[in-house]
Length: 195
Image (cartoon, rainbow, N blue to C red; front, side, top):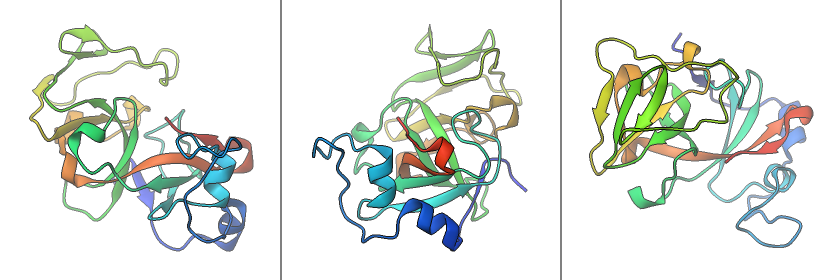
């Protein structure tokens, strides 16, 4: 079973009731603005075109844990709409139909390197506050540097020691992205927005 897999399919009724079963509509926060809806609003009133996934693996710990239910919205329409730090979904580049959920660390046109147990973007060490204290990034295989094309993204799991990601399968195409994670909807103690 590939790491980072998400369980797809029908969610149990307990999960559906925890995340709300209202009609799909644009979510709004308490201020009424749609640009930064709160997690509870996103769970109760999922945006049009959104999907829900249940995490099955530990590849995104501590951000996402096994059992977390995540609301995923549609992806941006072009490469310029993606942002470093955003968590996205895409189909396994290895050919299975599994869906992976990883964080974007490298954007189109950038040079990504794994050096000194850290990620470097165009020669500068990337600050990654979402990683567990002491988590180190190491290369997999013989490659430790990638020059991204104009339609490429470099994605990594936050649980680097348990993640199958761009270090093993290389950059992913912008067109491969199926959505971006908006919020954790369940369990109740972990409800939160995602960057």
